[in-house]
Length: 231
Image 1 (tube, rainbow, N blue to C red):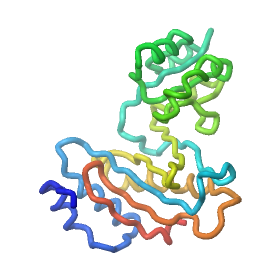
Image 2 (image 1 turned 90 degrees about the horizontal axis):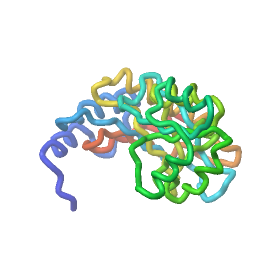
Image 3 (image 1 turned 30 degrees about the horizontal axis):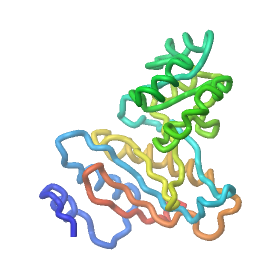
């Protein structure tokens, strides 16, 4: 059995074993069980009744959280011509072309959190799929990170846009803010994310869509939510 620290054990005492909480109560507990010296992230983990092995049961998209994530996001934009200047003016940390692809490939450089690309640059970064893909950094039209509108993409990324997608076990893992936000702002972010996930339900999905939902702070215990109340 894993050995947990005193703060974790104290936090776990606040949670009734086996209970599935209402959303508001669960998020309030998630904030209360955040006892680390740093501002912990509140995360949500949603298991869906789909099979990610099939293309028609994939669930993926992106949403700008109403209150952001509380994280400072560094953006890298692959573009050419005027779009480079537009991206930088919009707040991009880096913008350019092949020089950044070379830097990633040759120097193992990853000083960024989000990669955005104009459609005409996909040939340049297509070769980086094997290194960007596993890190969840490969731009995608579904996530709005392959777009001719670099200004909007950069602005949304900086404002707290997150991508949600299934992992191999059919679970979506997403941050929904910092504990310091407080339960009300966290709930606004939670509702926005869950609303997007429910709206993205594949037509091929049968039976119960949301199988389980758990929230937790970075260092805190998981808190089960009554999934019957959210979809």
